[in-house]
Image 1 (cartoon, rainbow, N blue to C red):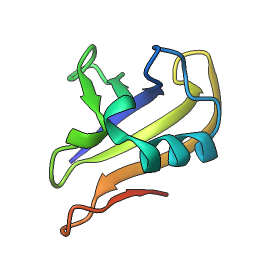
Image 2: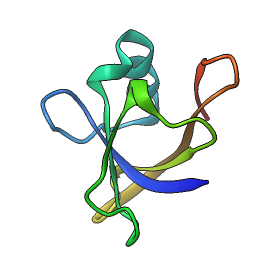
Image 3: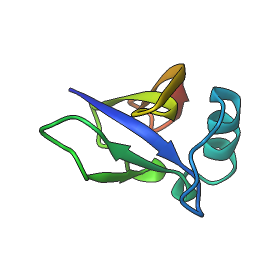
Length: 85
């Protein structure tokens, strides 16, 4: 299952780079929020520490609506390791 999202930091600011997203998730995944942008899930917020098993977040940044400079996939492996590619 996939969900199209944007990424927000703890203060609600957009994450500017994929590298910054990786670093924030490595330090404290609970401080990163993903806002779903697809019609089915629009408005849903998923925290970095609670990505559902089997779900891949397709991240567009820095802003999925106005500036699409980078893309990433975020998901949990079977062992619980958070991966950003």
